[in-house]
Image (cartoon, rainbow, N blue to C red):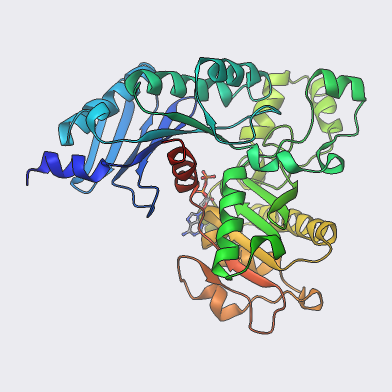
Length: 405
Ligand code: ADP
């Protein structure tokens, strides 16, 4: 069998999952039934003089450095590579395209078949997510041009949290202002929280309807959620992904008075404050590094700033865990996910340390044994299950999209 027909066979029946950002497009071909990924990769530095496209597949890795003027050109290059290793993109057996869309506002809370009107509505929501929805719309437009004959499905990061009770979703701000500007807590990372809480119930062989869960999604962005019987009742991100936990480069919760102070006393422009809180704060702002592995190295070398950054990170996490324990009226399962949650032994240990009286006990050996995949790290005597579940947002999106085929 030729290399070309093998590659085409591999993508046959897959869903192309697209995550389109301002200067990058991440893509993955996913088989919805078994989660296998015949190909994946990244188109990055779109619009810069030197862009890059990386394509992984069973035949090896392809990497090209060249100018990628815009998203349309990027997707065309992906299409060319797919044609080189198999057949043209529109003949490669893709059954649907699943798009990760950041903000669904109050309108979209289920996977939604994309048509022109839906694209316009997602674009209208850009005022709520100016950094995220416009590039999502671009991705939608160019992918629909490239693959006009398969269903395109939008899966929204906010969707899982549309169930938040009013008391959890409402900011205590003048009601006329919040109504006029659609200001409320929307939550993000919903696809991950939904997927991981579902997997946690399956891992425990329990009905999700019976479980009170706390999910801690700790990646570069980070969020916590409280889930009661499969329904989200609270989450740490709000109107935007800036609220909540300390993240790689985002501050998480701060006194909003700091913004006025920076404006009035430090004379910063609103865009500078936005940049400061979203891109230069969090672990990066406190320690100089945003990657948790680099932070750990600094801590081990005795760097005081890195130690403080770690302590602030864990302190905030414990505060949310405590809040959700009370909101839920007790918890059955606490699950860690995301790059940090799946891999960092210290964060898992320290965020739940000393909670034996609340029935939470992490087993040191299970936590530290370097295992991968879905696993339990609580001790046999712990009445609360503590799990590590690798997230897989692409699979969740692929499965949602495949339902429209
Ligand atoms: P994103 O939010 O960009 O999807 P990820 O979920 O990939 O982020 O998480 C990135 C974070 O996970 C980084 O801080 C990184 O240091 C951390 N991380 C990834 N792998 C490991 C590892 N093996 N050990 C410790 N930290 C890790």
